[in-house]
Image 1 (cartoon, one colour):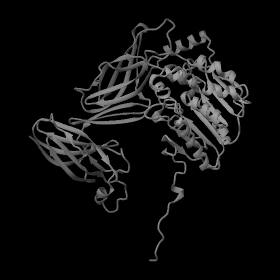
Image 2 (cartoon, one colour; image 1 turned 90 degrees about the vertical axis):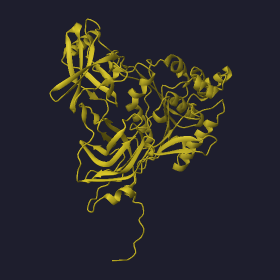
Image 3 (cartoon, helix red, strand yellow; image 1 turned 90 degrees about the horizontal axis):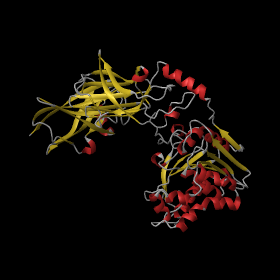
Length: 561
């Protein structure tokens, strides 16, 4: 049939209805950056998230932590003129507060919600904002974790934020005004009409000044809930929120569905320790054939490995602390190489590696002895497994275990005539050293679209993919430019971009794969500097590294004067 078809319209089944939208609200005097995620199903509730200091990309709880909540979520960023403001003011001008409030009210209006259908959430600085906005503007539900009540004094001691909020001279009158912002609201109304959930801990170094003196101010709050954590795993301000995240999420989930929790005073955690049982258990753990070795940060710089993480003998000797010696073992092809490691301070090991009892492994960190990293000069090509050796001569301990990664990674770098790859996950870490020129496959589609050489700066760009190996997303492979000469080989990383109009003419008939990102180029299309390369004639190649494979294609010749 050749009847005319209607135009295609969006298929709602293919639309992510809960996709996070990032935007900037400009309806107020000050632009306010935000993220928003719509609700799931028929949940009519809005959770507003205020961020604390040093939030990732300016937003707290913006990763996966709130994914299980069905409510609408509005994350608001506290960054104005490059500064924090507690979502309140700059030089005591409260136009920031008015603009943030406008964003919240506009969002409520679009959703058809009232203040009783809103929950405010924040940690530390964000917890102060949740209290301040909730009490001042009548938002029913407030979930606040380790907030500061005396905002003026707190920011005065943090000069950059203090000068921005209080004015350049930070006068005492302005400090007093912000110190009273939250307490005065409580003194007037006592939290009446609100559901308030305050998470804290006496282990928080701010507890005695920020929390304890102000608990009496919630005198009129019929549903004031104090959750005070007493745990071996919470020793400072920044650890309260992580420990209580499941309970915080439970509160928000219940509030989103209109079920208001009434907890009263709760002390959670378990700080009780039998010292004799602790000593016995940790001594047995120390004597067991076990070791901990975790890679936290990794990189490849030239022919050097930059590795840092944690490595220690677990448990505790009943005879005291003893120094340990650490080394990295690189093993493969019937050979092994051992490199000494420097011992460094390790933080939060008592919670990261909690095993029935908290134990500080303060000297449990490691890094290369040299700032430049661990040199692999002289190491032949091959596939190597990485392990860590830790010994305590005074205890007669000498153990080795596989190195594992805290998070999966795959780093590949060209170096001269080699490709060096460092690949890790929760099971192992491998080092692969192989020639940077790989397989010249008949399945390769290659086209050098443009190249130029100017003043020893060489640019290349074009199409490179292998039929059957999809190039559907950025990062599908690593591309390298390789120059091979009689005296030396040089190699350089290349970028990639999506250029379907350039790529698709090279896809053969019958191949229905996606290769739209199979376009390589020098970074910024600006070329690579060959300042230090030896003069002479070079064969040029492009290599593509993906999965366990490495493919190469000839890209002509280059003569360097």
